[in-house]
Length: 322
Ligand SMILES: Nc1ncnc2c1ncn2[C@@H]1O[C@H](COP(=O)(O)OP(=O)(O)OP(=O)(O)O)[C@@H](O)[C@H]1O
Ligand code: NI
Image (cartoon, rainbow, N blue to C red; front, side, top):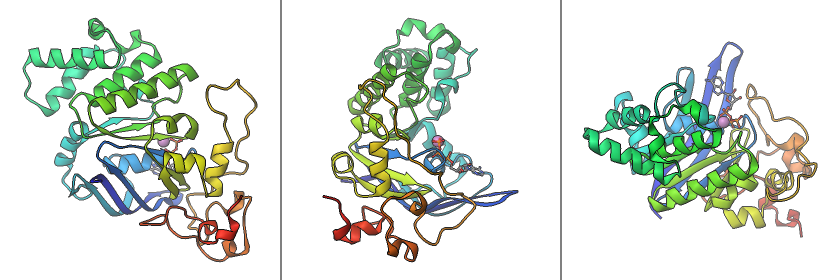
């Protein structure tokens, strides 16, 4: 399958007064044409940083190395102006807490027109019909385009953001935590909607979440991130039915599927490692229930190329459960 987005050996550090934060570590990541890919990990693991580095935002104190290619072209070193064209036109972004990203006091229509004008020379009539069509696609009555965001519910605002990100038919949509802060039934509706619009428009999508159970419903492939590293990758079925990395296993066990009655859920004990420290061995070791001698001395394999699990368990088949 042709790669639409291809990230290779990406390292991202941020310099701050406290010192250097090591946030992304040798990340290899790709999205094929038409694919829906999930990026899952707990808070602070670096998911939004990966998205924002691809889009070249949040860059003021960032140091990066590695390659980022989009449609066969390097985009990690292009000019700011060209990158602005890629953003919004070729890559649609639904930022984290995006239901609050719309200006609450500006009419929906004006905000949509502004995006269209930034990238095209469309006539007023065409802008109007495109805005209508986009709102219809996400189940918002186009007659409401003269309303302001504050007149909509959180779930409706999320739908409007999705319509806005898809407005110019980008090749790729990046949706960062699109369902967080919504209640369970609305969450399901929003992710089903994302899947429908993406498939309908033959777009690819990167969907970011800390919630493996909810997001995996729509993913073709999944990357699991822990402390800035991809620790496991595979098709949805591989990850859900045959996870290998102890972190993936814990993620799967830590929450019940949405449709179940609320039951007390088991979190993953311990805290994530500090970003201020460079790790010589496995970042997950302190929280892992399957540590062996080798973990204390040898860094696990990196999830690049053909390696799908960054854990010594993978190379030592005797360790596999069952
Ligand atoms: N500009 C910056 N300067 C310093 N540190 C930063 C900067 N941007 C991000 N970080 C740090 O990078 C780490 C990863 O943050 P990021 O937002 O990517 O995590 P996340 O996985 O998206 O978490 P969440 O699920 O909470 O959104 C955090 O420790 C954060 O404080
Ligand atoms: Ni985030």
